[in-house]
Length: 198
Length: 295
Image (cartoon, rainbow over all chains, first blue to last red; front, side):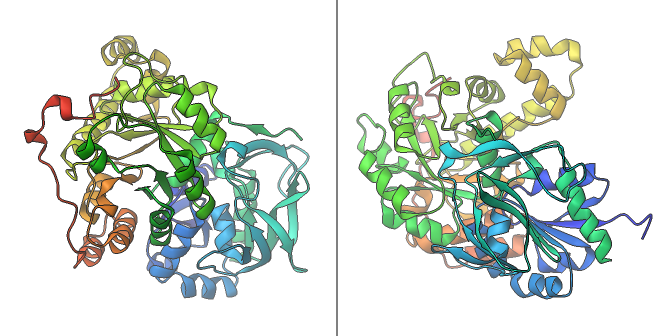
């Protein structure tokens, strides 16, 4: 597939889609804002950005993305969810929550580190990204964490003993916001998943 | 591992996550739940919505902590609350309550005619109103992590919100086209910090998110403001002063997402019942207008 420029969709119903598109373009692929399910036909993978997970969940359902994304993901299509994106991809969310895609076998606690005054950034280790010995500056904003991960799930990072990044096959999730930093290694990792899926 | 809290990136980051969303004024937990169910990205906890503040007159202050706490305990979306301009002790109370964002707002009666709050001293991020680029940059200079156009709150009339959004974006375009050696003179004209003027000229946009507020009452109003470049919208009196708040709230959320698709805005606008009754700005005196509070 050398030479082909990847098209990566970024779900743009609500949240920080612009930052993901900027980061993807820095990685020399095309970032495409997706507002309708028909947009998914022309992309090689999709990012579900951070935002408000209840809002994004409702809009995913309202605008008929549920079956479309599930169908593609079950066929191996790579999906990357950050923060709220991780929540809507989870199999289970503790406490009340609306619509979920249930594509990765994790149980998530929302706003698990506390309210905004407890939001933070920290240097964390991520297993599997390039130059993994160099810490990654991770930004956590009213972030969720993974309470429980199923057998098929590979946990890639922790902060203070809480699991904050994981992969199961073609589904990648992070509780933090790699799109808010200048470090492209997490996005590059996802793009390798995309290239391997084609 | 060192966890760094309350950095600029963390404060501005929450506003980035609210983009493309609707923040709704609420006065009770019941209203907050309606807003959350409709897809609001955050709620603003208040004692009275701007239209009622306008009607009842008197001094408008920070809401009763009991109201704010009830709302914080009953919804999972971020909860914002307003303090008076310059009233840093009200802001300290809101921080102690643990609200997610503080709005230093002209909708309440100002507490200081000269100084706004030094927002850099707080862990909780602030949103502030602005009617032009200079005002926006002065607030960012004081530490605001999010800007909203002031519009004219409690009127149900979008005309001032449009004026302020066009003004700010027009001034950004002007700065963006200036040669570097004219930026100090531009900073003087805007009465804005030089470093921020340089940053805006270089990037062609504000360093923080800019929402629209003040007079948005219909899904088409929201679509209008989004097409004019707003990152999202605040709806104050427009929802709970209308005939069917729940449906209107949901319709405004969908119109804010799909602002470029008129068919969808038409669909959600159909049969919404009466919007709040509005006020003509021409009929107001300058003293009645909230947007000239603060500088």
